[in-house]
Length: 153
Image 1: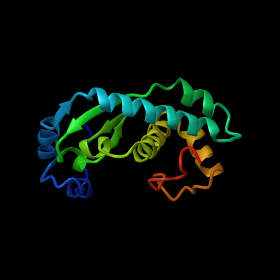
Image 2: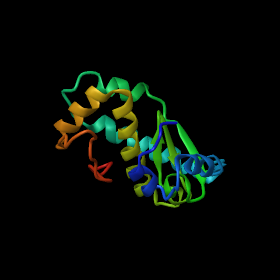
Image 3: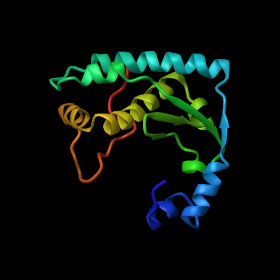
Image 4: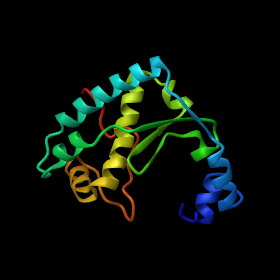
């Protein structure tokens, strides 16, 4: 794990890097219930349809996205990343709050998190695509609103 900056630690309400690692390791991993699995599969289908609907001149974007598997981890508790959905490498971490959302909101969330995964896996293509659909690069990191475009619309 990388050393966190003072700002990172403050945002995570951690006294030190060791404190953050300790409490993160003690966040409870959880299994998806049958209902959550069903809802998540529906959200992924809708998200896939949303991505497929994007008209782009970016070479290989659709090929890369369609071959990248959906990877999820389910966690409970509010300490790890403030109890918020987030990504690590190619995995999308879902929390209690994420799974209690409506199907529409869950779909929007997985689209948002998938963008972060794509940014990590295919930075050049994803940046070009985001610029094509109206986002602007504002510095070291891409800044994305929660709902860049409504899936299914």
